[in-house]
Image (tube, rainbow, N blue to C red; front, side):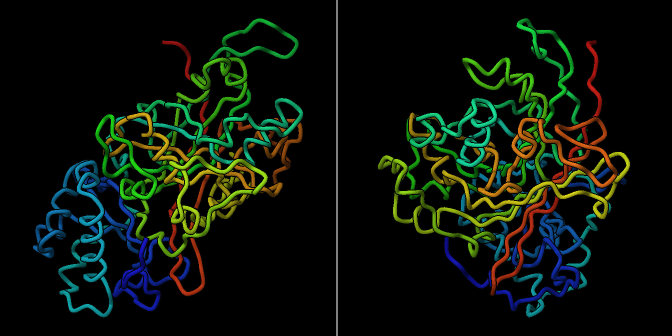
Length: 439
């Protein structure tokens, strides 16, 4: 990834809220969502976050603010999903990014009053899924998460032999993916109670979250034609926050021999904003692994991936309870970084297609749980609480081994580095509500 004028920290916007040092959405970010006003009968359409506002791309297009590639790209953003825009590829994505950056830069000479009419306060909108997600694949790429779970399940931290050789994944359920704020119904499924050998149908008592990043595929590939590692990121539009809700008691019974099913298919929650790879370019870092571990096969290895395949994205999980609502009362449960992942996003894309699988615009990949080496860097409660045996103590005196009804899981993410603007992902929220009965 290359740096250009859109990464210049010294460039401010004429929109004051975008220059707030605590803002997730400075001029250098410009992430995408699908939104509409809560009132007024608006249709869903694409918007770009700037400060506390949303830039309505459709309105700018009507005002004839774009030319050339940027105009064509903006026209694709008038649809209720971003799939057509994704399919246009990096040159068009970058053309629109540059055009928006120039229009809203304080040093630009655009008609600011006309541009202000394209701004919609974020406080007045609702969001939809940013794409029509045809397929969803969830990976398992954190060595620390794998070791932590293995220790809980088997008493030692050995991972399966194939973990060191390929990014492991399962195909998830796209129909139950929702946007931040959705209620998450406690799932019911087959569970084997302690001391029993036969299952019963019951609501999960060991509901968990998993801190992940979502990876949106931009440009697909033809069936039978794999994507080489050095081209993999040309097929990725951007990243969002992702919560892979998991019912651990259902999972423990059903996982052998084919892997997750009912324990994962009831809900996946993503944040409304997709941060582009261009915005994340300053935060790339070296990827590597211990020399004691097997090194990747040739199709999963390359100089570029080793030099800058990882991304230092800071991630945090907080918990709100019924008695402590609101960000000021949320309890931070963990903090980690995406740079710790054993496999990079490029390696995930390449391995996904090596057998001839055709990815499509709008497909979603989950990074797998993101855990670091520290005790409070785990990306799931099952790790933090040692399988529920060491519950965390909350300020209201309650304890949590796993999630209770009324709990709200809040995920946030951001990148920061000296000399560059802080790039944020916003929030990903989900509230656990009681299980629905059979109908």
